Length: 524
Image 1 (cartoon, rainbow, N blue to C red):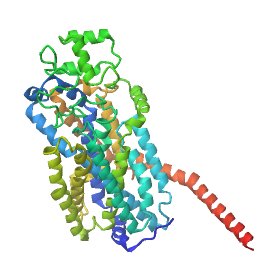
Image 2 (tube, helix red, strand yellow):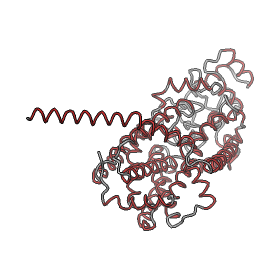
Image 3 (cartoon, helix red, strand yellow):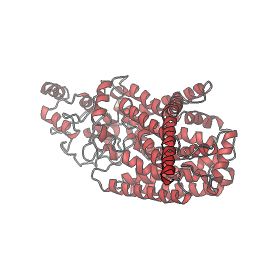
């Protein structure tokens, strides 16, 4: 069904016309910023964060802080938790909605119907997300985006009034989802995004994160020593209050060795580990029980195909975040499309940008800080899925304002725009690179990096991977207009349209014509 261009599309049509002569550079910069921000969020899932969480069992207070490289590393950890948790996946979700609106307007300007052939593109995104989940990264976000886009594409074919109704329905459903997650037991703060398996996926469902699938009570889901860490003097279930019944200090190396212990460890292996670290087998078993090992609680990353098999076996549980992605995406996709149509990126959209910035930084930021400090024990889902997305709107508005009257991106903006133009390729590639670097089937850095250097070492790897993505994208785009995955998606979409969509549409027209002829004959 065709959706006519109405007066509400005027600003968006102007932005689209502008982008035909020169790309809206803010869009590429924002996508690149979201992709590299997502990398900064997810990289801790690949690094030795699981070892760090286990090491937290061996000490409290200042002793635990020293194990992680001192107070400086702990402060950096806390800052990273605030900067990364939910902010970039929120921005990425908004940008996906903006991109969907741009595609809709492009189709209408070409005289095509909407959603037309777009559902095939969304289906390909679901397929790509599924393959990414199974073969590369268990916290894939593309599958959820593809499923949400199927619904939002149909909503964008309705009238502006109907779209506003659906927008509020989506935001209301997301508020209900956040409320349900907040009321669920086992909420804890974690350094991860939706796409990285947030607390809903990790704290309340058996989604493995290079470590404990179901973290011990009181331990952060990803093991980051944040505000979700156990209070001093508060023992975890199954763990002696002093870290060991004998009262001796447990070394960080013990927990690194414990992580590498197979889930089906024999009594001899347990005895060997206990003897090596001066513990009894019973004490080792207590730690194994606390982190869920012995029953497959700790994932073995030595075998790539073993990890693939594990993802297939736990596919439903591992995709626990899909409902969250859907409700969040339904609202944010439509908000992003609405802001684009209203001219957020146009020079004359200054008032709108100021409103978006004020909403993000004057409303969202204080709420986010309050949720992470004053109410940290009960509002982790609210901050991760709600207030973080509000802050993301502030980032959106600032970047849109900065480039509203600029045609040049500058050095930093150029690098971000390269990544933004190859967003899908960079998203998948960064997960693949980090898997090879940190997992045992590759370089195994997660098990080799000393705990006291976990924060600094992981940040160093992040910088290296980010620079590789930036300059690699720049080199690729010097020869090609699209990234490898973007090119593959484009060709696959064209093939599906030519070989499937067009024949099906022809058959539907023939059937309608035949029914009309039969009706005409019967009426005579």
